Image (cartoon, rainbow, N blue to C red; front, side, top):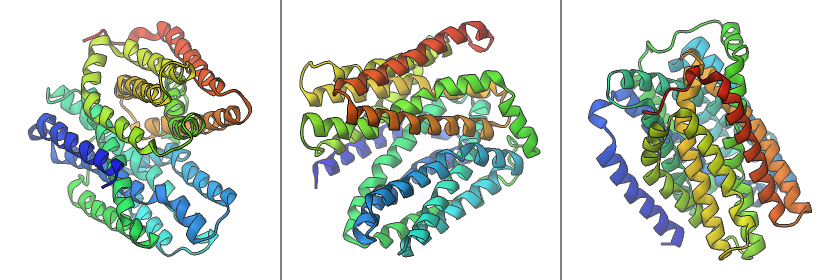
Length: 422
């Protein structure tokens, strides 16, 4: 077994401990268990295929680097850029049909990729995969938010804690998916794509039978009403734009980490270990960080999380210790900031949205975050190509720090929705 294989085994052992001993399964309704399980399986199916898609396009289909980049960029835009549209459709038609349609579209997308042998077919496949997530992901997230509110009201579990489990479930999928994909590399790419399609077919059946036909937390409304509610909510739009800095910061992990390893060590061989370490940190540390956030209160937790993410980018820019140690410190502090911020941020966004049309509201957050993350990655990439090694890190730290200060300044005047620390 490879080093990363051993690392993933460690992650799975930790997951069994965390999910088996700490999740209040007896108090959660079946639909919430389904939602949490789906977040694991969505990411397994996705990461089973997409990380290896670039290799398939370049080595098996003969695509040039520019075409590979274009296809991957289209996938990102069709997913992240369309979350607001997908979330709005879910609020308009109801969550169950949109989740089922989204899963069905992703099955079709993977099936197309399994047989695609030309540019048009590959583009159609990746667009289908991306837009499918824009349909089902906001609906699943908003349903979890509504059920979390009900469970908190009934004294079963805090909604922020449920959001923490959501983060852990998603992280688990990002570890298992690539591991299974690596196992399937001995087979043609079509096998991986077919396996992902089969997994999503199983998910479709589960949602068809287990997700309520009449979701009491979701009341279909006209699309224009949904859009107007989100866009005219100035407090939400400002707060979502500020909170999108966490998308920008986390997106840099996939650019800055391999780039820095190449520059300082001369090899990316340890890259997998950093991703495994990040997964372990989230799985083990998310629940304690939720408890810390509950004690600090929403405002301090969110701004403190931003501040940690900003500080993390300074670590690799300071020549102290080894490159591996500096990068490990960066990844750890970056994720600690995200863990402190995100569950509380999502709970607060739902409060600002008045608990209405959460699919569209969460979708808008993801859409803004996706656009800004793309811009941030392009900017940091330019600095890596044209500036000294420390400059991209200090630039990322400075931008995140500015947004942190803006959030602190802006939030002082709207503390009617900042509850006191618990």
